[in-house]
Image 1 (cartoon, one colour):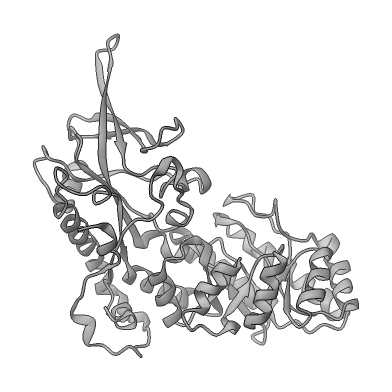
Image 2 (cartoon, rainbow, N blue to C red; image 1 turned 30 degrees about the vertical axis):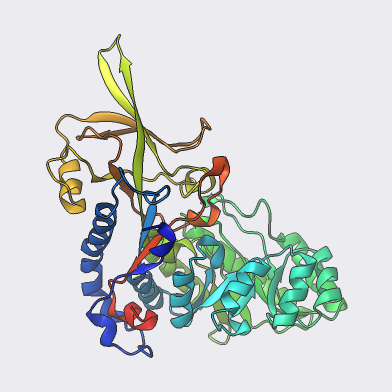
Length: 445
């Protein structure tokens, strides 16, 4: 069966009896989290078992994803519990998977879009334009015209030239002044490219006032993958300063956009600091939105890759043997996050022909108790020397051509930036499952 015929694939569970009008509840996620791993394991193993590498057509043994929509659902409940004042606007660029967007739309989130294509994807889901913020401070003119035509009014700016552009093309837009923040503790710094310093915000607001433009709020972003909660505290304090500047000019700002930067591992601590800062500096009358991306999707996606080639490496001087493994995906594909997002995906054995165990769960347990480790380096399929997934990895099994590895936490900045370099595919099948009844109900699984 060709990949196009099996993507997307959805497994169905007893939760189908729930109605699509189902409302998320905070107490729901306990059982789903426990079910997630076994369900992912079954989906991974069933897929690889269905592939006969001796007879399959080209591409049928390609890398593929398993996506647990229940994981995204749980992250949403966690957001509501710890950061209820902030309405999430999902950063589409992080992972524009159609099922992800459909679930988030059904749960009532907003969307952070940065291009015409992203806006179009969200609007096609039936999302009202008022739930979209065009969060790109430096916009393409034709895209601004498109946003105006579609009624997407909210957008950001951080310079005077952008104000002239908006005045010409969309004078009725609702504008957010993007301010500079300290993002030195983030994975991907955005302040190098966007944000007005506090030395300039007063002049920009005065300029917008002179042009009779509708500034409605302030936006900031502490950097993608932020690690310092203090960055949110300072950014909120700076935003308060700009709110007061705007009030002195006659503006009555109503919304604060706290951007993204949230990661699952530190979310609770970040949310606590941010919530305290918001309560201290902004009254309840001020609407607060955020732009989480990786927080929602990173842990929801697992990728499985096939070993397409192996090369033995012998160090005669030290008497050591190791192997180079070549996979059918790499840094020009779904592992682009290694280059662009500073990620370090961890390989795990999914299926090995000579393993004492041959299922995801058993092999993972065996792999964690290595007796005589074998060293590997892991490479992508292209002819480029930088296409390296892992320079050094140890494993108990002797892996060979036809075996499978899997990598967890592959939902953020992976498939969205895959390329066709060297003629390889930038589109890979996704098997969709749901470990949460609420997500199953909303998606009709």
